[in-house]
Image 1 (cartoon, rainbow, N blue to C red):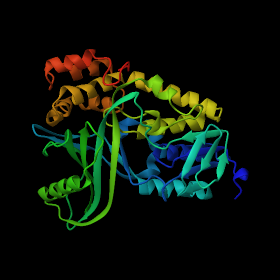
Image 2 (image 1 turned 120 degrees about the horizontal axis):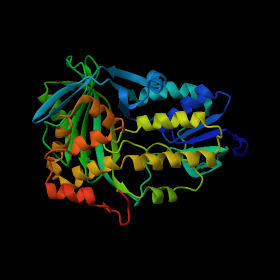
Image 3 (image 1 turned 180 degrees about the vertical axis):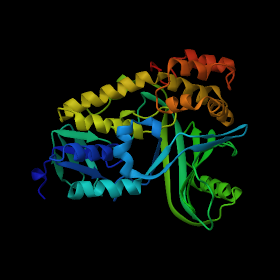
Image 4 (image 1 turned 90 degrees about the horizontal axis):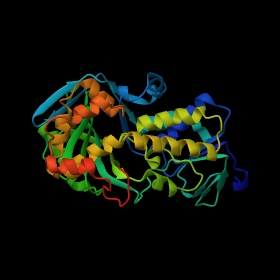
Length: 394
């Protein structure tokens, strides 16, 4: 196909979660548009599992996300050295395999897979093979954009989806099992029962650096499975991730460094729950907003995405404060105490916190009482404005 002849109404640079949800909503609500997705890998979504609590999104969003769910549970468990609890908030999982199964047929020949992007501009995308696409709306969703204007910690993990030699007996996820040795920061195991003899087991760390020791973490996953009496018959797949945990930053400077006039979405737009790193709820809300926008041009959508990102950043300053307390006021092997204390609070508060809707009363209650960190360090986190980045705003 001649590059000059390739025109579309919308070009999505990147085939991850955020752009996939935008594609779904555009196909559902504005089916007359030609939407082209460009993805470097051979499949949409890579190798990932995205989860969220039912209370993180509106019922309407939950309804259109439902075809993506590979599992949904009526609650979940947490385990800490001094506290265990079962909560009744529904929990849902989406796999990259299911995302590809749903989105690829919707896109049909307009899902360009296995292509490398050379340049993104407000009205065109140029590929490394020389082809080009033009459209009035180009959206960049190619994952996080590293920036000196954001001070970050890291939530990093390696997960294995395994088939066991015998049923595991779990009926609900273990969202946090922090009874394990604390290594490389706050460490916990995350376990999703995907079938009677299938589990996703992830070893997760809240760490100061993004490096992953894959071999060592793999051995820890093996040890955890053995500790629980699970004999792994087969490792069906592996996934890994390094998610940003926001500590502080200068959001205006971050956006000023973006490609002029190009809308950014997903982690690239700094839209994620600051403490958990969960990006699906924000991505789903952004997909709704894009599909409903009256002006589908890069200029209009850039203005909208930037405004949404900045508003969310301002609204979530309290979460960054708590993150600083965990990362900067705690010794790394004591970070689990912050979450252990948090999970003693009422379930409705926990739900609002994860949804990013903590009330003023919630915020006061979370900080009330003896903090699980040295008081002097906690006070520095309360008053500190720089938080790593000179001139950055908390």
